[in-house]
Length: 486
Image (cartoon, rainbow, N blue to C red):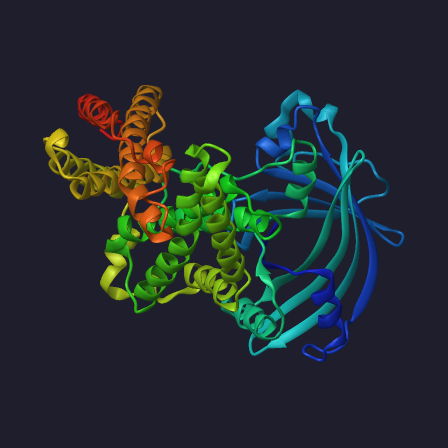
């Protein structure tokens, strides 16, 4: 078994062609046509277990590879890997691999589920003490009659430190519009077996009881970056309201992660990242506010048309931002900092980083709940601005709960976790509705639509008192819940 450390970058066909023609890394050392067949059980048990099994053919050589993901990563993949030559297209599954233990009797049901066909160009690059294999794959993934194109650069560390991968990646990004890649070829294949996704919600962050606080932060931040990139990929092709909403959520989650894990973090990069994330979130927020209003407006009429035109203009700004070097660099810089940044070795935060994630989680969630309890008192008599602060605190507690909840897996605590999250969601829903009410007049004023007759229905506060009462009830219900962290 070996450990694979790999950075993935995605690019379009025209950029790939320009890269091959350039002299940035010289000519490739090899060009191969490669076919790979991926296997799983009928109920996709390998995928659920975080395992991929493939047999790749290049010329007359067949190689079987089994990979086990340590975690869903944001661009930088570190995975356990078993590789061996095989005689034919039949997998060899024995006790030297993790598959028998994972599948048991189901191991006999393994069968082909999708294929990958690519042309692979390879370069070997030596940089100081590091040795990196750079490959360009162009081709497709196919499952039945569905296909997904593949055009990506993979930088695999053969020797040296991960920082060398980012040095090379930044040299590539300086000349070509590459983006951080967060999806493996096997994930592309499995996606073809499911209905196409319009947007990607946050994935569960799976933390082990032995994880350190630093391990937890790395997993949480990586999950946020991955969620952003998955939704950004959709927004680069279409103006989708749900993908935009989830992209914005991912940025808020990441900013919250910086705040929640602040005791671990040190360095000048953090204010810069927070500022850049705030800027990008505000660009997406302009479009999101208009999506919310447009969904409530009656079709037809000047108000609807005005909101629709403003929304289209806002999405043009979103497209400009997402297409910028600034955003591409931000995602790559974040991933580099997460993997090799000074926060990992700063003496001032060593004790906090090395602390048990479980202990950190209990202390942090307790403090967030206490802050919400204090800010939410007399919720019904608070001003809009004060209720907005309660909303932000509740949101941070919600994110902290989702980030760290897997550290408390016992059945009793699991039931408490579900009920706690349910109460948080109810509170957030009501506070969110109140925030939309407070935001609408500002947006309409900015567009010169406040006096439009159709605006009255958007600004009506007939139900505001009921929503406030519902928010207060949800707040009381949440504080009555038993905590799941003990």
